[in-house]
Image: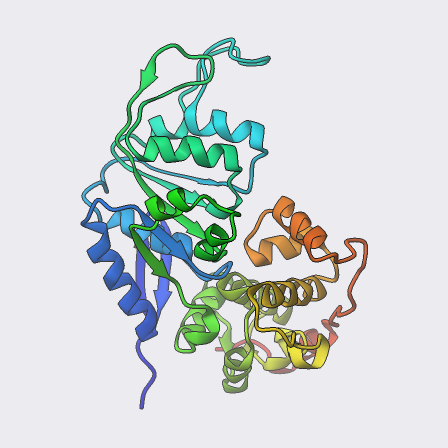
Length: 338
């Protein structure tokens, strides 16, 4: 049976390239959800495409001509998150030389996308819940209440339902956010998407290059702990070092299988899987924490917190630097395509 033809769409400037039935069905469902006014919680592993689905919901909704505003709840310190979301008046604090509207005001009539919602501070969870319930709020230092009409779409790579049951996230906020829950499957469960995405990323980097059959097989056999972000990095790097022509599997420099490098966790718990994934990505990045955070799709602050949580030595530099010599030699042998 022939492979499904890749689909190319664009949502708010973000390209959507897919060929799998899973993603086709998910985007169809996102289109139906978009026409409702419900809050949406998008769950899935880091780098699997949660923001793409969020943008699709806004693009396909009746609010599509109104603002789209997004923020990562793990990117800012606690003391800055409140002023970003709700704004402040002149003189509210040192350095507040003029009034500034918050993201809720900027998104009025449209959609506010809260990425990494599981990282939100408990105190901010309380204030966010009140606003989601329709209560007006004050800017920091303000005396006039602000009323907004905003649709909330949130995303997380954590199991918020479990976090809520364990007291690590407010149950009432979880239920308010998850009026509709969408799950984005990881790349390893969407094998038809791998050749489509790899071909797209390669064309973006070098339209003259192509992937050999063994390269595509290698890509499909790899588990992609960093999902689409990791695939993009691997293909882009291979295209740069190969210098055109047919890219062979040697040019990918994929790390060893997790079974061969780091022992697979015996526990099937989410914490065990997460710890294993962090260790594997740290090994891939040779201990470079910012690069590992980018691959995992989380902030460096979040990665540091998880390293402390799992008692992983942050100063360790895991082995695993892969030589580029085979790739550069291989590119000289293959040459340019006509």
